Length: 261
Ligand code: NAP
Image (cartoon, rainbow, N blue to C red; front, side, top):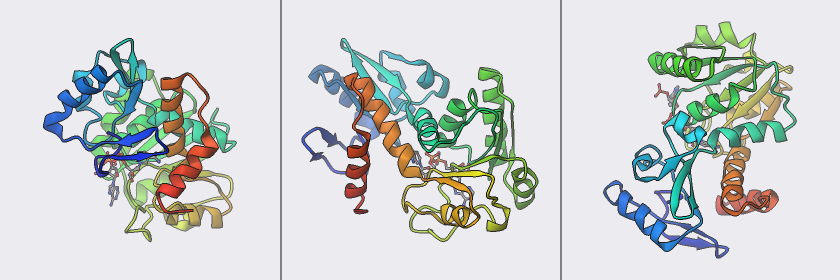
């Protein structure tokens, strides 16, 4: 269940992507439990619906109400969510010290939610801007209630972006804007980007999004979406095997798989 768009396929003898349709999710989960697999990943459209077929959720999955990693603990399937922690690890591995940062997150979908919940305890404050303003306000309220986080949410407009970006030390694009095939799109005017800020774009196809190119041109520190993709997978690997993930091998494998190497 790695990617619903992939047909069953084996890579390096250890990774199998299986297509599962929503009506067969329950039996697929039961089948994997019966087979005694150590664990598996889950992606869209099953991240929320799978929670009702599992034996429990860890704290991150319970907070988010969504699962991307399942661990088989003595035949009890426990749901985890490594998306947000993968993003935090990507930022830290890039040398970004999160303590005290004012963070602006664009988006309020599944990825933005996971990132915001993992980042909130680490940073000073969060400003959430989303095209659908009500989703940004709801996410901000959920973060305040669950974590007591200093966060405000509002509708993403040219005005709200330019008003708030001047106080942001870290800008995160957690929307799908800039993703293939609309690779020329960016939500942020290049003139708003500064050399004293860090810019993280979670879009990984293409590796160099328009936002990342503009941020580099402005002299900002940049982090691309591939790092989050690899680190959320590395955290899942570590949960299943209790061994340190071979991150370099994983970066290479993802790039090869995506035809980028
Ligand atoms: P999602 O739940 O569908 O959310 C999509 C988000 O993008 C929403 O906030 C949506 O705003 C916003 N959006 C879409 N089109 C927009 C536009 N034209 N202008 C402004 N905002 C727009 O999707 P998701 O799961 O959060 O994923 C978002 C992106 O992150 C995707 O590109 C995905 O590939 C990428 N991603 C990367 C990783 C990684 O490991 N690097 C992990 C997960 C996801 P509305 O709420 O107003 O619709």
